[in-house]
Length: 442
Image (cartoon, rainbow, N blue to C red):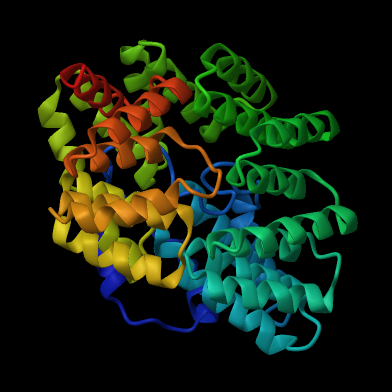
């Protein structure tokens, strides 16, 4: 942790008006943090990790800070500033901006407590970024009650229902949002709900419709990246690279598209290119899932010391995130279970599953239990994670390894074979382990 970051976390919180007036920007996390999970993949949060979060106004932070200095009673500017802080933290991997966003939304609502759907929807997005999905759902519903056509309120309501494991309600909310406010943010979320329910064909169809309706380079890049991620998850690597190329032509430097491309390079055996790409990505945005992938690539390439340095930073990132009010997610749990403090991973996994019993938290709890030596307890959760129709090679790998350790060799063989059939290169470490286990049991 840099001295600047440490001091920021220790410093007492002061009024945001005073901080903006003195020109203090959001604190950057000046370290290449990483988490190492047993397999690649994301939490699945917010179309977050499968579809991604919609582009936001992160680049407008300085102008908005200047605006609220000049017009401190402008509730709309405070709400916009809060949203900009959320977006900047989300894209940079620095959770230190979330407390500042919280204070900006509080200012907006203090100045205009009634009918302020913009601030309510923004505060809902902040709660979602912190993985506090009950709060996200409450504020999103309040925003939609004020303004039934609030795009952000409608979108965050879908996200929150997904992350609370309420998939049927999420599908209905997505349909309602599509009727009220059709557009890229809603289309991508609708596609993700279909994917979670096992209907990948419909998910792809909706995304292709969204791509045809995209009216800006950012929207084109966003949807093309989602299509690339979906193709990668089904082992269609040439198709994935084509979608990534479309995304990067529309918006050069789009980090999510670059990550999709790097992951696909790795799947096609272009390891050196994948490592180089991920090093640049993690330097710009050291989010756990991205750093996980880099650590695994190092390890698969036999570069154990760089991988070890990456894995050693799991606890540092978790502490920074908690200090900013961010609950652990499945990426963090899997990272700690695979390469960090297994006992802490299990505590966090239980906590997160109690808070939101989703397929992703069930998978993370299963893997944390298994890695902690409690394999018999793990199996029911691994089966729950794969019971909804959602098909993810990492989930199947976890279940197969747990079945194998439980002595259920025939079941393990079926499950691991399915994981490799679905996505033969889902993880540089996990795929190799799955093949080794299948070879031993042949």
